[in-house]
Image (cartoon, rainbow, N blue to C red):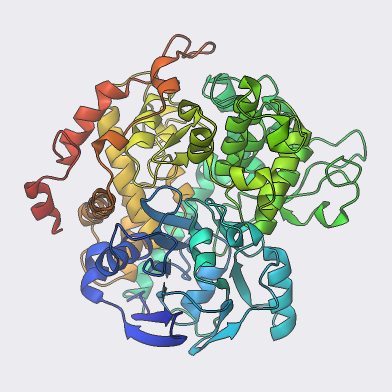
Length: 616
């Protein structure tokens, strides 16, 4: 079997690290990573607990295909209760540390309690210890990574750490691994820092064995790689332009959230697009994009590595930021660009570097800055609040300043660190927060992509594109083309994407593979790696079970069907331009049908029949 069958339980209060056997009955029901760790969390914590209190737990977890030869099999997730939303948080990351954890012989690490003093966890295969972190507490992620590598003198050591933002209580802080990959959403880094846990450093040399049927696994994974290589998106578009391939496409569709989602198209999108990243700058003749990169086992290589113009206002006196970090993805470019009305490519790149360095979710941060800009425009936020800074739409200087003070937790940065929902409530305009369940929107306007509106509203971790990416169908025609402005059929589409994504996340694979793969490509890889029934039908049943388990947690935490909604702006204010001109999101038409298809009551609660069918 592809599981190691071992978990590590770290009691931070007592300072102990103990090995336990993986619950294989649960593994058969929830597969791994997202699903299996959620099952552990649901069984072990009170959903109403304080997310930043010692009773919350944090699980770092791999999937059965993590560390194997499956394409993109390097993913890991962090599962906990979110301080940003109060919902279940599951944040997924690439890079190399997931593979390292699996190669060290562990399926997951469960952190519980709170250390009395700052510590980090050091793991070298079976050797595991908690070590005092006094010297790195208060340091950035990059400084922490450098310090740990110098201490252990091992270039293959993999580090996941939190930065200053998490220590200061920023509610959307991330856990950054491999310098620029992140478990980025929902504030999982804030939970980690609340436990006085600064970093996890892992070296694994054992390899991944126990593949159920090695010959079948080799065949299935090789066939899968061929499919990805031949696909226009995974074989051409993503390697060439990364996720930034979407910038101009989404803008032309009229689905580009602009200036805190007041508008649906941004006139400066071409200046911050993937194509723009390839163009030589007039100042030094070099492009923003240095190279692309790949996570462990990835045959797509959508990652970006960028270099900023050394004379640019944001970095001219800061050579450490000129290059060598993760470049802009579509979401980051949108968050610091279109949503703030900014078309300065290098300024957005710098803000993204700061998010890597100090562990912040750029989607939540950019959206929160955009909300603050609208509040400033209305006079609700003043120069007195910002220390004299003009927080205007279109100001690249304002965006970089806001990112800096949020990273350090200083002054107005503490307000920005609350996230959009709490910020807008504090300054008297809650309707200006573009959030669902307290989590900020990604870069797709649901007035122009109707299915994404339903997906946002019903997602178990708040507004999120990666839990049901109907853009694949509504915009790219994958696996079938559907009309983005049509609501008919969208409840079925959203449910199908949500259930399938739960399987992909739980297997240890990257969701980007689904641009090329269907479950007919994924299930044979799981079946060859893992003992048991992993047919297409059973995989999808597992995905549905995971989705409903997450829903159960949120309902027990206090969420209701009333939280399955969108901001009034998207339900009442019609798009002003583009193909969706005159349209709002028709959530009220889609939501009742979605509940029915899910087997939920009119209030959004799984029925007894649904719970019985899924074994909940």
